[in-house]
Image (cartoon, rainbow, N blue to C red; front, top):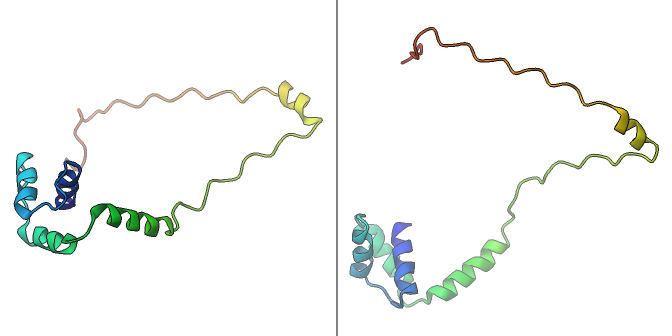
Amino acid sequence: MKHLAAYLLLGIGGNTSPSADDIKGVLSSVGIDADDERLDKLISELEGKDIQELIAEGSTKLASVPSGGGGGGGGAAAPTAGGGAAAAEEKPPEKEPEKEEESDEDMGFGLFD
């Protein structure tokens, strides 16, 4: 991923066909060592291809992938016409006072420390 990020940064900077040395330069400037095997694979897979076209193609593929969970829960039911007055008269339940945590008698040392 770091190799691809460096490749894309170089592309944004105007280098449309970054070499392995260019990518190593970007990575080394932030203290990251490049993995030559992965870097060579990335360069060979992207050689001769337009990165903008690849991004557009990937975006269309990604759009067809279902994403998201099962959806949120249903909303609360609306009150009936006569129920509004009764709801206004009800008092909300009183909150119980929160219990204070007991102090640690073991001076902060746990069983498995």
